[in-house]
Amino acid sequence: MVFVIAELGTNHLGDIDVVKKMIDVAVSVGCDAVKLQKKNVEKIYTKEFLDSPFESPWGTTQREMRLHREFSMKDLNIINKYCIRKKIPLFFSCWDIDSQIEIRKLNTKFNKVASAMLPHKKLLEVIAEEKKYTFISTAMSTMKDIETAIQIFKKSNCKFELMHCHGSYPMNPEEANLNMIKTLQKKFKCSVGYSGHETTISPTYAAWFLGADYIERHITLDRTMYGSDQVASIQNSYHLISAIRKMELMLGDGEKIVYESEKPIIARLKNNFSKKKDFTRFIKGRIIFSRKGFAEFEVFKGQESYKIKPFTKSNAWGVFKDGISKFKKNQYIECYSSSGFNEFLIN
Image (cartoon, rainbow, N blue to C red; front, side, top):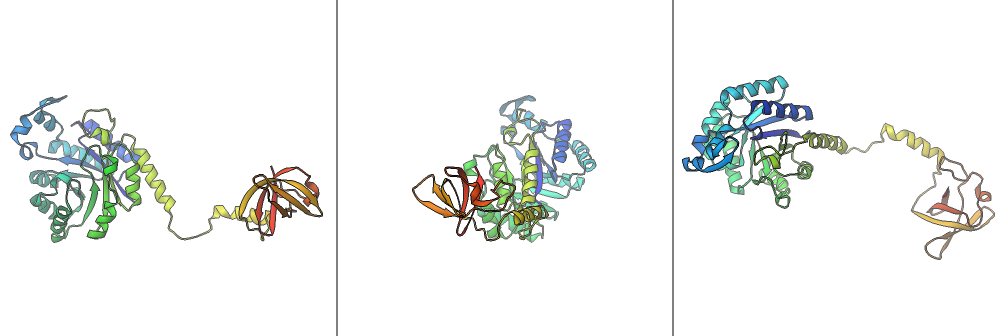
């Protein structure tokens, strides 16, 4: 079964109560894990950028907005314990080495490399040395970038999964390039998942069908809430998970079998239809002449006529029981026409 990750991102707006509600949603719809981001804002951004004007509910600068959305380790301990109680794994994508080392205290099961962090070799080395199964996002990167990252994880003998994705929020559907899933699988001989940033769910279905065995989507309680990621997030994630689980069942195992539900139909058909029957086409017309067990059948479209023999056994569809004596000139009927045998059905 496909592994579904609910990316909480920054849609929680720095509110633990909102995070808990998002986790509840993820659990209720059947997600397999939830993910948060962790970053040291003062270290990864320049002072000029953080001091730059930016209007938000929490202030007038980039610093005020970004610091508000970050949780302390005390907060993250509370969130992690909540996930444990709800029996859903929590893991992180860390944007700096200090955050990655700090998160180790929570003893999470997985790691995630954010697309923006793919070129940061030292961070990748710190992540890989933990030897946890790691999801590596590949947006905004070249094949060389991906190959370099893979070498780091292979060197540390750390298992990983590439995640095909796009860096825009939301993604332009025409730029989804979902065939990259197959390309990455073929080139790197590894598992490839999909991290979607689109406004719809259809690309996610297509990614799964193309072989993505891990699916990650941003979720939200309300797409009208503050934040640039909200529009690229799923509000009613139940529909996505439910559809994927149903499609997994519908694929079956590829073995041809006769199902128990088909057997009553087989028995009914054997009782009601001739074994000689070989339907080839469906035509409509009318009887124009009948004599001695045969009837001449006029096709509505075209001038050709057919000499046809009526079916003589009654069945649930109302086929005439006594043969040609029941048919009358100009009576409109429907006929399944085949070579050597025909059935008449009441029109």
